[in-house]
Length: 192
Image 1: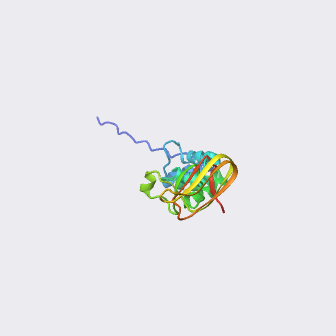
Image 2: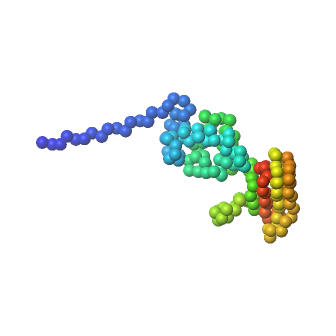
Image 3: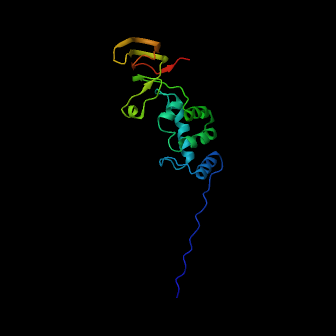
């Protein structure tokens, strides 16, 4: 007597929720986009970014800078966010476009930065080198014991200031400067 043949059950087609979340998930599946395993779906990733953007850059990075420098655009992240953010949080579409294009304003918190108009090489970045382009920057807000200094490539102080109390400090970093250091200051933003 012959064994009955086992029939393979067809894989059920995915069912997507009606609305923007379903549209994002369906497109991600069609394109083969993959998001971090932390998320159940592409729309879950987008929603997390939408929830994070209002507070993400508050500690010293512009919103597009946070997106680009925190790894959110790696892999298929840029594609998923480019499609998903306009659907779930359109107010952040401009930030995503700037981050994906790499054209965004960089802000700088406390630390020591190498003055360079070019980003650090992979080797420098691995060694912890962070660059700041030459230009004029302003730190605004209530600052106590804010110290900043511009130094030559050899480490000699070109200019510095210690402010026991300040509300706004402006510094111009020259292309010939080697480093810029700031401690206990507010975020340095480019002056337009």
